[in-house]
Length: 241
Length: 241
Image 1 (spheres, each protein chain N blue to C red):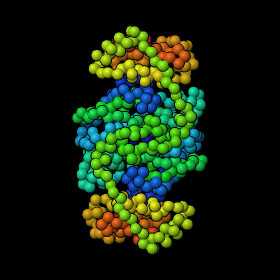
Image 2 (cartoon, chains in turn brown, green):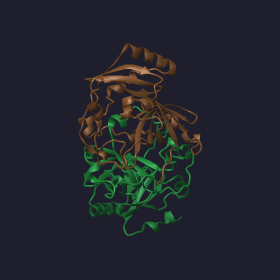
Image 3 (spheres, one colour):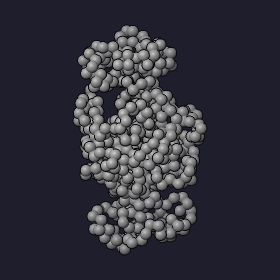
Image 4 (cartoon, each protein chain N blue to C red):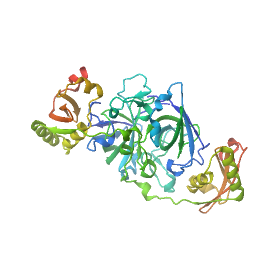
């Protein structure tokens, strides 16, 4: 049983750090998917443009674990464990992701998507239309997730970050960048190890679009310090540690 | 990129004919999934029992086409075509199905499910909890599906079918069998070729639980004739034709 990507996602998220854990958390997160013309013809998309939302089935290509563990630590549970099938962890026997995305438009063989929780370079296995009558369960009970609500952190911007964001919006031809940063950092993108190891106020960074967003966290407040261009992702000290 | 089943579904549907096209159409359709203990430990399910609904990622193992076509004929469109990615057709570049099912209970390594649209023997690749806040899009637009509403057919039962259903419920230890048959046949399970080839009133059959449901269709009325036990699936004349 072999699978083969129908295309590779080009996402605003350039690394796992900073990529949201669920798709609804950052409506301003954008991506494009261009079908691999060699084996998936463009006509396969006919009629999809009438749908506002699509499912992306993806391959968790950045997993490094050899074998998934039976239990995982969802970030929301702050140390608590659940079975992997009670979670959306990427570390699964078959590393296939399921993300609901907003379909903004289709341009030839390219889908323009938003509300993405996938990192740049993610192989996409399938696109399916979201059909409200069979894909929605409005009265569903949400298990442990309803017992672990998350209150977003406050997110502040330095003056430097404000002007960097305005410059980035002009350069990239987009809007809503501060809202996107607020949505992302409000979720506390640090993993439990980061939180344990980083002292409050330490300078962290993640790559988004064409810049590195540098920020710090003190208590329940994240501060965006600056958006740097010209830094290289592999030189990020966090990843070398 | 290889996938491997975490288990094989045991479903009330014994063949493609009669299996509903979407999971919400037959709430009384039941199945069990037992994890393959050799590579997926039972603890992987811890905490899943708090969720009322789960996603099943499945492998469309009964596909016979060598290569998917770029356009498909959804039954609801009565001859009309849409791109395969605008449909939930099983004939896809990666033959992976996505079904929302109700989780009735978990018993050891076995999930008891209902509202199933998958045939017996379907390999399951993944189970994920349904998380309403990230998996639901209540205001989503439903594309061509909203322009092709389907009015269920009327379903009648002969006296023989009534008594066969009562006997089957007693034998199988279940209830709601007539409702299930009504939900299934109301959708007109015949494919367009059946409709074109079968004269009104011809006797058809499909296998469900441990019996063959024999029925006929005249106009927009389906009649359940009898529920036969002891017939063999491979001897079904429909499949030999």
